Length: 279
Image (cartoon, rainbow, N blue to C red; front, side, top):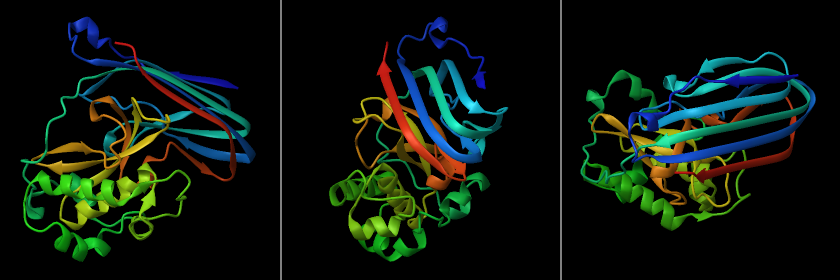
């Protein structure tokens, strides 16, 4: 069965906004399911103020009816399906990114008691972000300063002390594991930064994204921190420009932002992602 799931969107360039970066995204996933399984797919671009979706289309072979649901915090879209045998998902999108990246150094860290209720869960430790285990280290290594400069100092520390090594971690690797081994991939860098930030009383959430100029192309994981009443992107890997990120989903850690969750067994056959600038 070939199931298609398009969305109705508007062309932001038609409104006269010519300052955007227009990106084209092409994603192809091919898996083999040993037995019938439920699948939760999260690869569609989130519709947000700083990233206007011009067009997109999700096509999936080898599944039953698809049911779309909202992502965490109402950001993005997840799609339920039942798959068996050969599973092929293709997603293509055109997105206008209009994000003016500025320094967060002077932005104020909001006191915990003044945080809005919806961001409080991003202070807690989670499965992959054991924030409570970093409190003493963070207090000693990043003392004082009640501004975003503290977060940037954490991000630089991670970038300087961790080696980016493909295959150095797996689905069980946590922020503590990464801190000890001093190596990992983008999700590990993001888990450690989120843990540091939470330990300092700053809400932090994981973000999955498509990333322009990421080499090699793949799904990317970064962090958003809550400062001065809003969320701000930080990428401790420094592998892609922030104004070229296209957010897919947000959550407490990798559990919430996984591009595909399979409730059973699946074998990856092929996976390809392309993000190119077209305007």
